[in-house]
Structure formats: C-alpha cells, structure tokens
Amino acid sequence: MKDLVRYLLENMYLDFQGEISLDTVRQFLRGDDSREAKALLQKLIEDKGVNDLLITLADVLKEHLRSGINEQVMREQLSMYAES
Image 1 (spheres, rainbow, N blue to C red):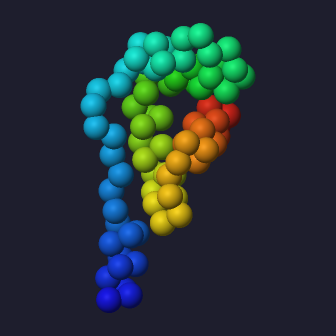
Image 2 (image 1 turned 30 degrees about the horizontal axis):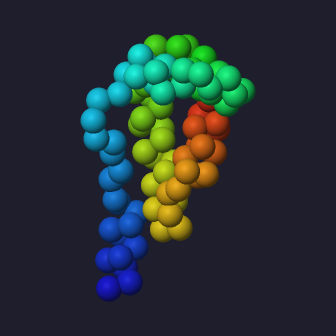
C-alpha cells in the first residue's frame, strides 16, 4: 500500500480548468502596482502568453500537494516564475 500511495502521489497530474489568457491576467492584475505583479506581467509579455506559466506552475505546485497548496505557496511560485 505504501508503494502504491507513493506512486500515485508522484504521478498525480495537476491542471487548471477554464480559459486564461494574457488579457485575463492583465485584468486580474489591473490596479496592482506591486513589484511582484509588474514582474509577472513583464515575464508573461516576454513569454508571449500564459502557456509556459501554467505548465511550470502545475509542475512546481505538484511538490506541494502533500503539504497543501495555499495562497502563500501560489504567490511564492508566481514570484519565482517571474524572476526566472
């Protein structure tokens, strides 16, 4: 059972439902003058969209499934992506 649980946790697939585009992200960040928001938007513009962000985010958040994904974890991962 232990090996099965480990296997399932390691091979769990994380995805985001719904459509999100660069314009949608801009709307969410409108009025947010924080350094994090500006860096993320700049990175997404350089990447020409959100596809790389969503793939990267799903991959790194998988590591947090055991301990939990919360707002702080999400914010940290978005900041790390923006700085990469």
